[in-house]
Amino acid sequence: GESVGLHLPTLSVQEGDNSIINCAYSNSASDYFIWYKQESGKGPQFIIDIRSNMDKRQGQRVTVLLNKTVKHLSLQIAATQPGDSAVYFCAENREGAQKLVFGQGTRLTINP
Amino acid sequence: NAGVMQNPRHLVRRRGQEARLRCSPMKGHSHVYWYRQLPEEGLKFMVYLQKENIIDESGMPKERFSAEFPKEGPSILRIQQVVRGDSAAYFCASSPPPWDRVMNTEAFFGQGTRLTVV
Image (cartoon, chains in turn brown, purple):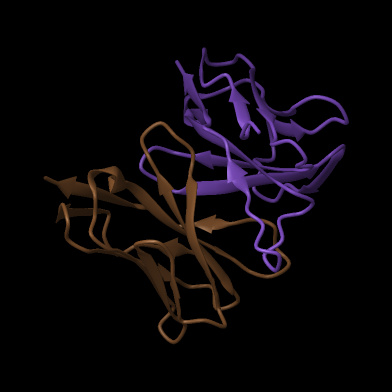
């Protein structure tokens, strides 16, 4: 069946270091991916998205990489800050479907 | 422009009672999506509605759960005869008509309703 999963449930990094959060997906029909950030007690917040015709997309301090060959997605956060502490979810979508399929999530903790 | 508004933020119900969760979409948004999140898990799609229409309810449990989005007023997710397994955070998202990847529109999420069944 469909699944979007994450390799690591928790990740701790030092403030100022770069973070890499990984995600695997199994539905080869997926052609659109989104990373969300969810802080405690809040709803998911859009970070960055990427379509399957791209392999890299950059935002402010964040980069998403897509490897369709191995069905792998990653989120890179540069120079992490305390405010980056949250749970990060990848979500996938395929054309024609109005719903998102979310992964389990990775909890990112920033150490001072 | 207020975001997606959900209420109540926290709801406690005894087993067998009914739970009603409300979602007011962002101004100008006519499409609503409901997701459920169990502790330490990702969000799971439940239902997608437009005004007065259910478009996709493939994620809704077959019994006890229903959703509506009337012409006037908020979208309602209704859970009858709640059980402990219904305890979760329920999130609503809204988008312009409809969520369009090509146009890079964004579905915005509310802060959720945390349902606890005791």
